[in-house]
Length: 110
Image 1: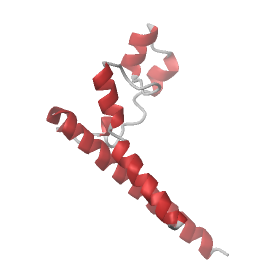
Image 2: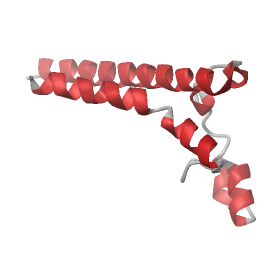
Image 3: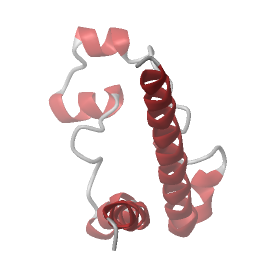
Image 4: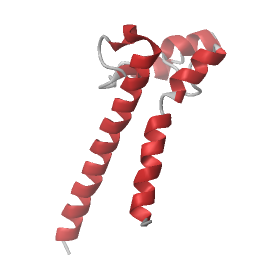
């Protein structure tokens, strides 16, 4: 098996495992994933919102907030898991496309 095939096989496995970020916290009644806190969650954990975080929290709005499409929040765990997988595929397609585009641009300069 070629190295590239192994790489894509691994990527597909990671895509299929991506809903574990939803399923495990649901199963174990855990809170947000470490480091994925919003300003409100941070205030709950620490007791205050640092000024820098408060000032910059509205700077970036995610294209797919919580890795789900608008209205999919009500579809339950299966719908959200499917949204996680679709989000992973979209992210990988965009990333691979940009890397290939940059590679083509840089290789033409030689």
